Amino acid sequence: MAPRGCAGPQSSPPPQAWIWRGKMLAMGALTGFWVLSLLTYGYLSWARGLEEDEEGALRAQAGERLEPRTTSTSQPHLIFILADDQGFRDVGYHGSEIKTPTLDKLAAEGVKLENYYVQPICTPSRSQFITGKYQIHTGLQHSIIRPTQPNCLPLDNATLPQKLKEAGYSTHMVGKWHLGFYRKECMPTKRGFDTFFGSLLGSGDYYTHYKCDSPGMCGYDLYENDNAAWDYDNGIYSTQMYTQRVQQIIASHNPRKPIFLYIAYQAVHSPLQAPGRYFEHYRSIININRRRYAAMLACLDEAINNVTLALKTYGFYNNSIIIYSSDNGGQPTAGGSNWPLRGSKGTYWEGGIRAVGFVHSPLLKNKGTVCKELLHITDWYPTLITLAEGQIDEDIQLDGYDIWETLSEGLRSPRVDILHNIDPIYTKAKNGSWAAGYGIWNTAIQSAIRVRHWKLLTGNPGYSDWVPPQSFSNLGPTRWHNERITLSTGKSIWLFNITADPYERVDLSNRYPGIVKQLLRRLSQFNKTAVPVRYPPKDPRSNPRLNGGVWGPWYKEENKKKKTNKTKASRKQKKSKTKKKNQQKAGSFPNCHSGTTHG
Image (tube, rainbow, N blue to C red; front, side):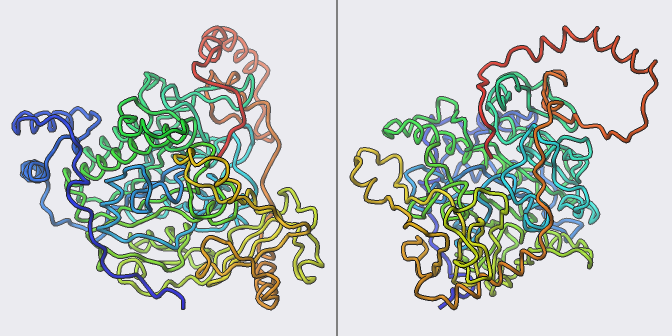
């Protein structure tokens, strides 16, 4: 039987799980410190050292200076929090040894999404969230947008923040963009955001905010709107820095006017870095990568608590919808865990695409529930626009569905299938063929599709192991090798009943050829609607050394009006004067190691 709607209320964790142990402070002093921290936009750690009754009293006292609870608009405040590379197991309520009290509580009081899918790497998930369209309909089917490529989210796509602005929202983005920046028109502030504070690339140093894509291709990657934020080159850990900015935005905004906050944290993507105090509870984890990852996730959990408390303090919370999602599965070699799911980040096995996700809101009709209906990251686009009382153009062909009634009331999802992807230029499976696809589909091509219970994969789906939690490395190699499998020779097609077999242990492709053919036909239908892949070669003009030591827009159309020789000579003269200054910025990058940019 397919899961029907959302299950009933779940018990909340005990209050003790919410209380961070610390030194008890006098009530008056703590309240004064808290208010002072808010006014100065300092990084808050309100949850630490508070007993539950003290915390409630503190909020009540803060509430005396808040706006009235009623608002002048029916439009809810929309807060979308996107974690980076968080594994399916890596949340407390999925059995992780990593403590996430904030996420656990918010999820328990809201709706846990337990049949929710994203894409296996960064750019595709972000593009589908912001457009409501599958990758095959934006040309981003292959890999990620790399910093040296003249590529970005196609400009002819109306983005979510653009539609929300049309509906009267103030729109703000904090965190990781990773949707291209080679032209100024590709920047977040040109794609619908009133303000942007964050990084343009897929990864970078958490403290210095520098990134090397390859030897000699290094630059600073922190932006305030359309300019490099050099003033923030002061060693602040990005999770805390981004949270500070979110608190500033909330504190300065009128809660009577709707706001859209897109908070795309860098954590817990590599490099594995975290402030020392977050390692305190994880010294016993033997695997060093897992230990660092745990510290990063602990810091992220605290940050989300601080964002939530800011919403409450400034009068936003009662009319807000908070959505939490990971952008893809975890990477075991970088500390993440998707156990007991198969595969990892970068693959189309469940471990790469089934995500941690939940919705928390006082506006939900049914709270404390678990939703097992089929959902996808493209669904947020129409859902949020509808909640915002915005308009979706009739001629726009979306791949997402409005799922609010599914989330809030427990109704069936309007979605019956998900095209996970069709990537025509990914490395072809050696043994794939049209014959293996019954003449319907070339199984050498990497693709994956879900239709109701059934999931079909073709081509090379990616690393296929079930990886045990890294913290249990003392179990030794026997357990590890027991979980490894070798794909049978000639294999290029797999079929699973995900409802009955969520861990993808039993391939049913030989047992049910009729179902295989049906899903292959559906793949073929989707493929007929695909646009050409956008994956241009590297452009040497992207080198930050040519742009003042900063990653940023570099591309200029060749057909633009040519400047006079006089203007060119003047620019050359000006460039020579500033050459030493630029070389000083671009010459050396602390803590920046060359290597391939990953999603």
